[in-house]
Image (cartoon, rainbow, N blue to C red; front, top):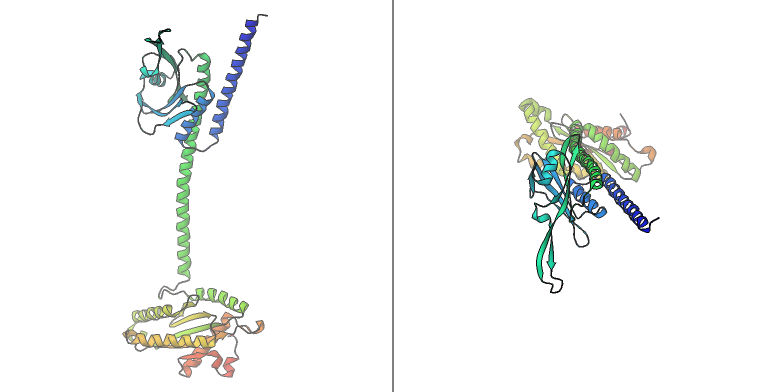
Length: 405
């Protein structure tokens, strides 16, 4: 067998193997891109980088069809040691359909493989020198090769992939088959990427709408909850709120051996005020007293409107003497307000107190219901004795022995 033949055969097989490996590398890299989430600009630059790094291509460009024009979106070429890529965000380079080999590929939907003789930027210039004197005697101009592949899917043209090589007649039928397959793969990835981007955008919009709807629902639920636990007339929490909060506070006081006092406050002569001045005057007085009480309570105290002319207050960690001092302060503030607010002139406050001693044994600790009952009994006893403030522990033995209604 002829040695030259064997050399040629080996070279052919070797070139084919290298070409196959390069081709597989291209599609493998594209498949990896398909699994990544990226912007369209990043996608284009990565595609051209993969193409130049794995195929013997000197320059490549990607045009997208927009209406009846082709816009250059990405361009890549080899530098000294790496691929230089530029993304075009604006209409820097725009071709009409049918203009040049790129426009012709888009318009005819056919591959355009030709030498670049008409375009100066694609011509190769080789300086010819005199061998002995190195004097320039001329310039040899040779055309380069350009291959334009339309990006088509279901008979719709989406753009053109343009490839360039400095050698004339470089691109052959094998190149056309490979890059045609590459273009089909590319346009499908492009559409998938756009579809995924649209889905992500819609998902973000719907997620944001859902988030706002949930926030609005939560806000409405809170409003409904607040309304259910708030007295509309005074703006204070209602009896249900007081019972819920005081029950928890009383349980904490019992658990840690601390005092808890209940303070029942009643506006005396309130019914007379209603008879003489009407409901609107009564509402105004309730609001004024509510505002006074709000300014006097501590953080952690539990103030609420109970019913009619009565307010109730839970005082965590306040003993009997502390509750009495608090009541005296409330009455003093109301007396000061009488000189400023005419509607309060004929009114007085009566206060009934009860206390759960933190040192009581578990068997003698009082429930919230008992504390409220005792505060009410103390209030009634104080009114009979004409006392502004009266504590249940100071009541008659027959009354003090009562622990529940």
